Amino acid sequence: MAESTELQARQTIHAGGEWRAATSGATREILDPADALPFAVVSEGDEKDTDLATAAARRAFDEGPWPHTPATERAALLRRVADLLVRDREELGRLEARDAGKTVEEGRVDIDCVADAFRYFADLVAGEAPGRVVDAGSTDIHSVVVHEPVGVCAMITPWNYPLLQASWKIAPALAAGNTFVIKPSEITPMTTIAVIELLVEAGLPAGVANIVTGPGHSVGARLSEHPDIDLVSFTGGTVSGVKVAEAAAPTVKKVALELGGKNPNVVFADACATEEGFDTAVDQALNAAFIHSGQVCSAGARLIIEESVRDRFVTELARRAEKIRLGRGTEDGVECGPLVSEQQRAKVEMYVESALKEGAVLRSGGKRPKPSAQRPESGYFYEPTVLDHCHREMRVVREEVFGPVVTVETFRTEDEAVALANDTEYGLAGGVWTSDAGRARRVAGRLRHGTIWINDFHPYLPQAEWGGFGKSGVGRELGHAGLAEYRETKHVYQNLAPKPVRWFAG
Image (cartoon, rainbow, N blue to C red; front, top):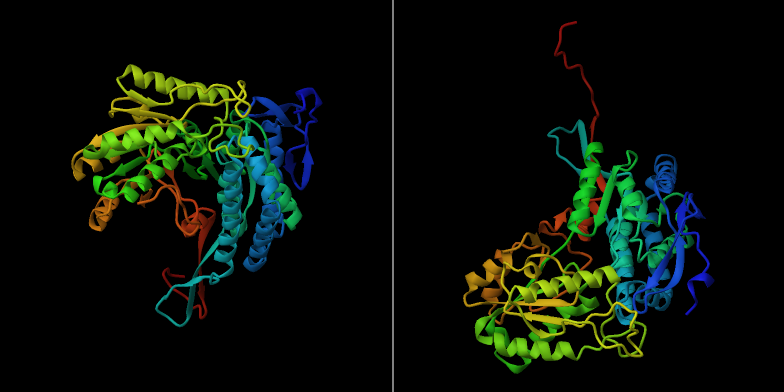
């Protein structure tokens, strides 16, 4: 590992087709969360860099060819990008693992999903009709509804799934004919920089794709308020999302917010009636809570389980949680990596300490692991933690922890299970486990969450919309609705035989 003094800063701001350093000359070290050592240095942009990138995107939209490029040609470019992602899958997967602290296998899966997103939106626009004809009740009138790009889009993405979340914005925006400026998280920018390089390699015209690496308080804030930005799409925490919406309000730009979640995983006793069913439900509860160290907006962080099977289920869940192999994500055999930063680990520790003071019972984890060859002492590791006997008044139950912590609540009736699952300010996702098909449909229909998994947890489909209720945000990503976020609707009404109206004398 090179010392920080040996690392050479990269020009990571891309504006108008050129890579450049920050106007101020500022840089930022990117740390590997497994050992807290820097492995890259990037440009640290600010408001001036943001204005330059936005001006480039504005020119490319107002004067460039991309908004008027036929949908089939835009789709072809997206498919070329998908092919390049497949070509660079191993390199990008490892870079994502090192940047965000996840395992290489998770990184590879992310790249596969990114390629799928580009292909999906390519297919979606390539197969569309040019417009929807509206019957005006006369053969002399031709009326059609068409879709046009929004314009210049600002994209602000989070640190937990850097490239995946970026692709959910970039692919539909380009498919619709927009230009954009993207600001990745300042602590995990590396794969977003890489995908801009792939867009250039695929032949995207200069100025269509722009990136400014830098902090939210300068770059993100400026993008949100900038008068030349037509849409701002933000994925991240609710507090920051509110600030984005407030900054965007004076210019009345379109806003899409994908925010936090506090997601219930409801397990009925009948799902555990067989040994296979019990083992599957426990295994999926582990995946729901601890994939990517729980740093997932849709994590099943609230286990809500029927009282009759609670003791056995939680005992097995805790036993298996203790066996999860923690370590550097690029090492073979590692199942769970570190948290992304010291700040994030301190936040998790605060929530666990608060829960124990409020009466929660620690069944596993709850501390930093012992250092090892795979877990340097300087890394931001935290053990997978199971907190039993939790209740709604606890902060750890109400608020998004975003770490490897699962809380356990119990119920006796179906109505009680639904009430507990819906007793949250968030409404992003949730799971229901039952062998009763009727109950599955009833409970899924009553849950106020954007995505409901039945007898599963975490899969998503590019064809399906992703969004939530309550403080989980507004707007949709993926699917037809995800494409619609990046479009405006225009009604073209043509009178083929115009005649005087004679409303007024003259």
